[in-house]
Length: 345
Image 1: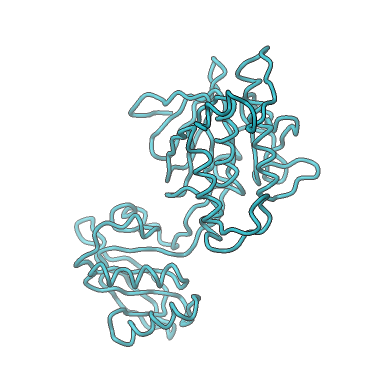
Image 2: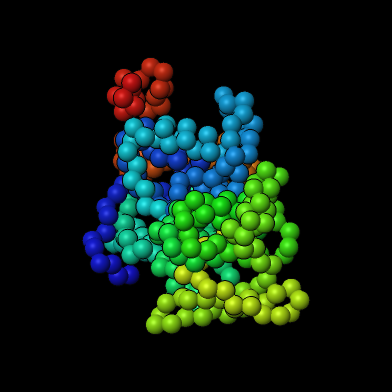
């Protein structure tokens, strides 16, 4: 492992910024364990934000209903007193045990951590964007090829190609008009688009007015000059080909969970999930805990509320691991002066 800067030293590193990861930060905070958090997505929220940000959830205790977005907002507010440090848009690539019992963890952004404890709250794996089967696009990622609209640079006066056929792709195309892109082209493999009726109506009006170009086709080749992406070759549904100019490309094909390097960490697994001790949700690796959908044990239920329970016991387990021989008392947030001080209430 190599890094351009010294490792960040921390008592706890939480891998995954979804609901269980955020609650893990809160429970660790109650044990006076401050945490850094890494997530492969460019935003906090994990599966809640990626797959059902605006869909209702009905089985969170005390909340008769809330959206995924609302739940993440509440969990961030709850964890805020403990000042977690987030490292987003980074994939964990390596985990190495050290002689001092700490774990050296490296990410895809050349960030490294020396952590006394690690909490894997990665859900069903790292959510990564679905890519086109065009390896030559890799050279342009982060410069001209993007997977989230929030990552796009200034598009004014640029030829933007959006790839995808769902609501996010349509919304990004319409937003590009407001930002004064020179041209906006939506490419989708089918003639049909998947979005709500109102958004479809607005999009088709823009296409009819020739403000947006909609092409049903597959992208087969790229065109470049002086190491810059300049255009794309499309194969139309009827088999003919067509070229379009492209300065910037936004690929909106959704995301998929990947187990990634977890499988190579040497931790006991069963059916691509981490085996844990349900007393404290520790794994077979000392100091590494697993909570949420990434773990497995007899009677496991993949529910957010189950993950909250697991995070609570994992925090107590971490406190005992970090402070061997010290009694870890059970305190209540309703009455404990120490907890009130930590929470700032």
